Image 1 (spheres, rainbow, N blue to C red):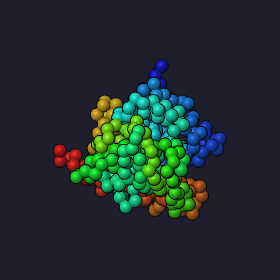
Image 2 (tube, rainbow, N blue to C red; image 1 turned 90 degrees about the vertical axis):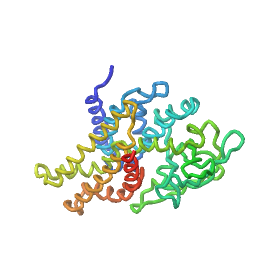
Image 3 (cartoon, helix red, strand yellow; image 1 turned 90 degrees about the horizontal axis):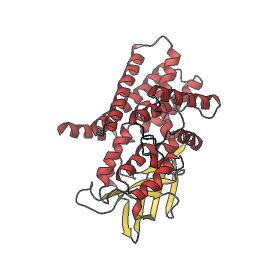
Length: 362
């Protein structure tokens, strides 16, 4: 029997409410990146809410992207601790489903849907900024696989991850976008070292990861050798086109609405209207994905506009809230400390505008 979207939404709300009432988590801004709880992931896995759109043979639910959107939207609204499974579910699983070999699919995907595998992203590198085409981490062919050497930075939860997605250079070509390859790497492999990067609030989820001739078997290549650029741009559409690009500061907005009651001023009303429009764009992205035509333009637009919205929520809160008050403003302070990353992760605003300009010129 298929659960309706409204029933599914209510089930997620009930789960989050019960965990909060029991004191098992505290709502957090930016929870998809900063709030990590394996036991919560296991509970979602038990309910079939990880890998919801994937084939049943890998533990998936073969549901629509709209159903997945309903679940992720409610989890983010509740500030739930979803970071442990988020990367694997959002983008690595879909990339492996699309490009991975059957061996790789059966080796990795069931662990994600069970909540056992925790993925970190090995994309950004020191001195490379948001330019993924400038990747210098190298992968050299050796008997049976590849030896990977290089450094990755801003790698969230690498110190907790069981696996890493890694973008590396397998050949030097005339054009820097060529010669890149995607890999799945066991974080327990010899030659990997993880160094913590502690943020200004004293929290640790960022890391720098060093790979020193780390051996990766041939079957751990995702897709075709040298085709990494095309594949990673497809993957970034999954990364940019979800509700996390809109709802990272939602717990702050919710608190503002609760504080204002019936006295909502024009600016706050405008923020609520913008949120409704951005949610509509999220649903458009999900529907297009269900129809087999995921839109790079729509995903980039959502990320660009969503980043601006999240920033404006915090700017409004800064001006109208009593920053010395209690509990409510703990949320605000956490969100402000997280906010510098909003315009960088998933592609800087400048990169997104470049993508949109190129799409418009076609």
